[in-house]
Length: 265
Image (cartoon, rainbow, N blue to C red; front, side, top):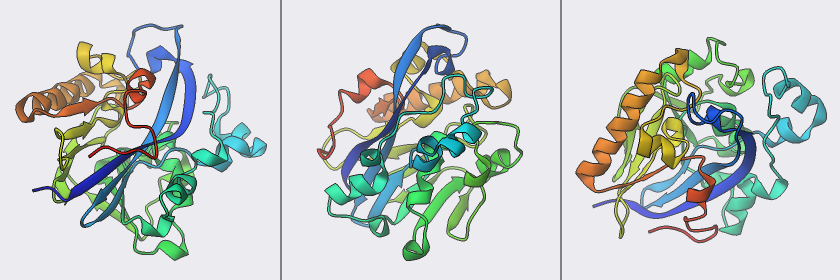
C-alpha cells in the first residue's frame, strides 16, 4: 500500500546548452533545449517536493546574473525563467502556498535543483524539512564544483541530513545514485494506479543516458564509472519491479508527461 496519491511534473525553467553536458564525451557542439523540472507528490502523509529549480533572482537580476553566471564558467549563460515558472505560482494554481509543503527532497545541490529554496524556506514555513545526503552536502561545501552556488549549500536548521537509502513516506523511497555528484539520490514512487515511477534526477539527463548507459557530462571528480554504475542500478530496479524510469532534462520525454496542472496517478 502506498501513501502517494498524485504526482505533478513542474516546469521551472529551460536551459539551452551543449549536449555533451548531458552525454559525456558525446555530441559536443550540438545544442539542446533542456527542461528544468521539479515534482510535487501529494501523499496521505503530506506533500513532498522533489527539487526546487533555480533562484529566480540570480537569473533575472543583472548584477546577480553577472556574478553567478559568469561566461568564464557558464559558457551557455543562465537558464530562461519567468515569474510564472516560480514554485509559488505553481502552488497557487493548486490553491496551495509554500507553507503547504512538508518535505523537500533534493536529488543534489546543483544550482538548478537547489536554488529555488529561497522561495520556500522562510519564517512562515518553519516545519518544512529539506532532505539532503551527508556526502552531497560535504562535497558541495568543498567549493571544488562551480555548479554548486555557495549561498545555496549551507545547511539550515530545517535541513535533515540523511545517509544512504531510506523511506520518506509509505511507498516513496530514496535510492542512491552517485556519480553526477557525490551524494546524488533518485526517488522511487509507488503510484496508486499505474506502475511505480523512478525519478532518475541527474543520474540520467536524457533517455539516451539510460538506453546507451552513457554517463552525464558532469561527473563528480570525473568518476564516470560510478555514474554508469548508478544508471545500471536504476535499470536493474526498473526491470525487477516493472517501474517507469524517468530522465530529468529530456525535453522530448517531458512532452510525453501530464502537463501542469494535470497530474499522474
